[in-house]
Amino acid sequence: MKADEVIAVPVNGVPSDAWRIKRALGPYAETMDELELLEEQRLIRLKRMKNKYKGVDNNGKHPKVFTESS
Image 1 (cartoon, rainbow, N blue to C red):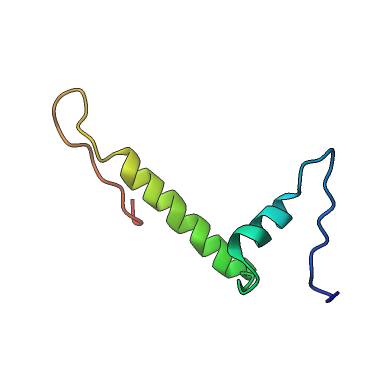
Image 2 (tube, rainbow, N blue to C red):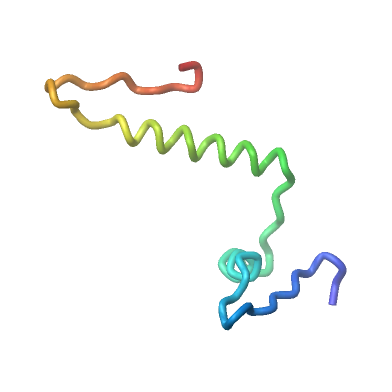
């Protein structure tokens, strides 16, 4: 067993999140460092905000689309 390997011990029969992520990404996935993780989280939040305000509001007008600067 390697030093960076995650030991997944099920708790009450439920596997840990680390085990699920490792299984979903496969053996060749590289772990992200903290800066990469924060950048990906920021991009996901931005994407969700843009998708949330894509539709037409109650007055029939298109609402303002958020960008990184707003």
